[in-house]
Length: 602
Ligand SMILES: Nc1ncnc2c1ncn2[C@@H]1O[C@H](COP(=O)(O)OP(=O)(O)OP(=O)(O)O)[C@@H](O)[C@H]1O
Image 1 (tube, rainbow, N blue to C red):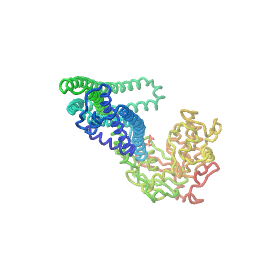
Image 2: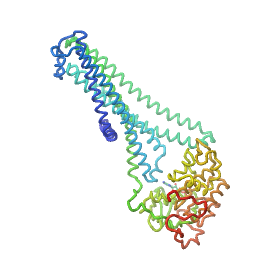
Image 3: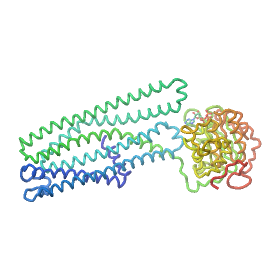
Image 4: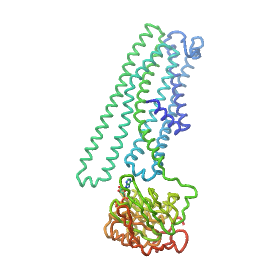
């Protein structure tokens, strides 16, 4: 089970970090080699120090053995110089390696976070809406950080493997028998610890699931804090979190215990092996003191490397599920992409006549169809209201007209062209949407407005605020357009928030403005202000209002009532023969009043 996923992951790391990954590996190899050679240089140095033994037979490395032969060996000063040079080289390589590794880890983390972020953004709305927000948050934050830990441990693992290989070659050059003995002992312990590594994988899987559950619970609690406090439910949430934390803690402790047992086993076996090694070297093989000292030194370094292999493998295996989850999520979202913009389709002419629902049906696959055979038009320049009981499909119609969901039957037509054949992003550039809670960023009013029209200048912003009835209160604010609003700034009333949200929508100069229950949480005075703004906009764009209240549906030129999946239209007698729109000029909709926001693009 272990090798396949690790090889996949190593492939991903190499692809994402490109040349830097290879460079990090080369630095790792060179660093390990220079460390190994500097240790090897201890042999002649020890011979100088203690005058021990004669030549050092090097079974595996005759050239190096020749270098240390008493007849040809270097004198003390050049030897010390070599030793210093290798140690310095190792330190410099370690420095470069650290920078490369940091960059490599960040490249991998950025790559996976960005790809997932883009995949979510490009996916169909129905796919996004069907996924728990907490799972996405966890994937984009916690899981990618675990990928960083996985990359780090993969590098530690590679480093440990390289070091063991180099030390083994060096040790074999001094005593092949003793080297086989040390490698054999290390490998047996590694094999014996296989169950601990399996536990690491299981731990990683449960950790991912419980972190997502915690994230879900915490964001639910924070979003509904007011309700939680009102119902005295804080303690209940705290108890749920405590239970989740306890489960994760217990699993984590079991994992830590297994890891500590592994380390203990390595240390005990290492001590026994060292004792056996010294006994065999001195009493059986009668090796010279310099060779025994260097072998001991090498083995003292090999032992922890075996421990490092086990440790980094465990950590890697416990973090790999986060990478696998991220990959699965990316694949799921990428497989469910929104229809791509097709060349030639992106250019949609301005809406002149109507948006028409033509025998539209919608079946979410959960019981009865939500909509059946729905046909009506939203005329350009007019106000259309959609009313109906809760759950009757009003928002579904708004989502369809924005191209967020596709009808399961029938078509949506823009001036006779099927929306399904149009570039959805190009169409959405012509649509503006105001939801029930206008959603403002913790930023200045200007920044909030710029979300809808990044190129808009202050004059255009003021015109949009004027049109939405928000200019007055924004002008009275301490820093005007630069006033920071929402959580960290000035707190706005619900009515003020919605008027800014409406201004933001108008700044786009849309062909279609959608208000989805945008005034349902407002009092009469605030609703009246929005209603007046909408009335001033009549004739400039198609306006679709989804609402329950009669006060706002009363301003509509037609009211579409949906009940049990079917529509009944009222008040549309004067709309029978829809006049081509706009009558004055081709192109963008004309200004209806002095408060019409100026175009930011023209
Ligand atoms: N993505 C979805 N998957 C499955 N069912 C859905 C989905 N979106 C909406 N529905 C179902 O379709 C029905 C209509 O939902 P919709 O939100 O369009 O109604 P609505 O008229 O806007 O309701 P309300 O006035 O309460 O906001 C509901 O029963 C809802 O549960």
